[in-house]
Image: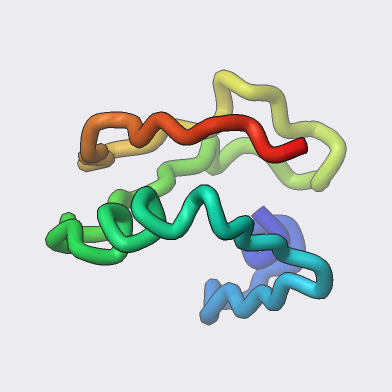
Length: 78
């Protein structure tokens, strides 16, 4: 979206978590998550008519080729 409204080419999205938590009672679920095969990355298609970042609405984004594994249940850590 930022690339589109600025007229630049899209690049890589890099993100870091400053405060992520992994609880001991979730280790089995994490192992399961990490054992999954990777699916091909999906594509996000944007409405090309939008020119301002605040002009986008939900319907302007289309996700294509998204595949997911079944959900993994875990107890809520308190």
